[in-house]
Length: 146
Length: 149
Image (cartoon, rainbow over all chains, first blue to last red; front, side, top):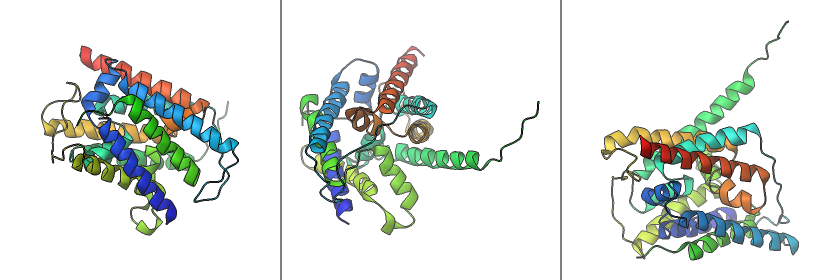
């Protein structure tokens, strides 16, 4: 229950910041993608910088997570083919809708209900991906004879 | 209300990511929020913190609109920089397609602009740097291509 409250609280903060920074305006994202303004790139860079410093300070101090009591730590992964293939598809979708997963939900809260259409597509896409992966995993291996 | 400048909004969002690390030792990922919702919507008692974070996104948008912004109910999406058609009926299939590509792609890649682009890169993940470079390059390239068509 406490983790849900934390999620809700931090989600409200995220939604407020995204709306205030106008990340919910597809025209702003398009200007970013057309390299007409650097604000969103700088936003992302600053967020990553602060998050990186904060996470490392927490880990170095030997802190434990306040709710889960886990020692603060993480594992990083090497890129795989799926990382690149999936990112190409994600980038293609991003270029069409000019919004991404966080801001599209915030749009709904601001009253821009068309954002719900993108959300519906997003949920359909990730559900379909799961089904495709399951189907491929269940496919019987066929012997190849020379 | 004027737009919050990047040098204020960026660090504030960075602190949100740190807050999630400090409380739950988890990365902030938009994709994970949707997966949580999609997989547990039929059994709400199993919804995790990520689904609640997604609800928070919506509430945060409403809170901004009700305080510093201006709430107005609108069916219009806009042309997203003169790329989408103006008519809502013609926009819907494209918005569904855009969303579906993002959902399918992000789950295949293991993250999106939040999970890879900010959380993962902040931790120095090579996969996140590869993903971010790839989806940024793809979206920038295609956006320029749309302008030529």
